[in-house]
Image (cartoon, rainbow, N blue to C red):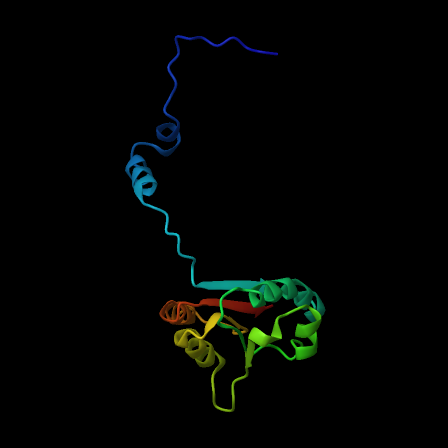
Length: 156
C-alpha cells in the first residue's frame, strides 16, 4: 500500500531537526576531522566464567597473535598457572616467537609489562593485571614508545 505525498511540502534538514542548531557546529567539526589510521596501543579483554571456558575463548586470540608476521616476540607477562606450555602448544601457538615472563620476588607484573612494551622487542605484550585507574595510561605510553600493542586480560 502506498500513500500519496504532497510535493508542496518542504523536507526538514535531518540533523538540525534532531540535534538542534547548537549541535550543528560540533557535527561539522567531527566530519572535517580526519580519521586516525594508527591502532590504539592498549586493549583490554574481560573474561568471566570457569578457567576452562576462559582458555577456550582466549586460545584463538593468542594463536592469531603468535602468527603475526612481525619478527618481534609475542610476550606473555604473568599468565595464570592454567596457561601452560602444553596448552599453548595444543592450541597451535608458534612457540618459536613466544616469550613468557613471570615477575620475580619483589618485581611487579605491571612494571615488567611496561618495560617489555617500552623496549619494543615485542609486537604484542599480553598481561594479566588488575589495573587501577592511572595504570592503563602507563601501559599505553610504554606501548607507543616501543611501537607495540598491549593487551590486558582481566579474569573476573
